[in-house]
Amino acid sequence: MRDPKINELKKKAICTDCVGEPYLQEQIKSQGTRWLCHYCGQKGRRSYTLEEMSDLIESAFNSHYTLTPADMDGFEWAMHKDLEIDYDWGATRRTDQLCQHDRS
Ligand SMILES: [Zn+2]
Image (cartoon, rainbow, N blue to C red):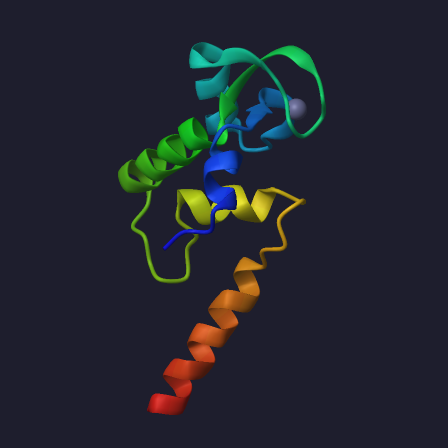
């Protein structure tokens, strides 16, 4: 089961300025809504909620990349990006790798 914070997180918005990735910035500029950005506090820039962001990243990954177990999925990325949530994607993966190593 997902963390209960997830639903709260899904509603938070991120603006074009806070998304460093050029492809995602373009998508948000053309299709985003003017929300209050959760990250920089700016109002009026086009933004996506993290839920929309997660869908966008997932579809971008699916069409441009082949996912391997070493890649974040859309939601892991969003959680990784949120500084208020104590989520260390790298640590999760390192643990996975250790477990796999132990089994072999
Ligand atoms: Zn912002």
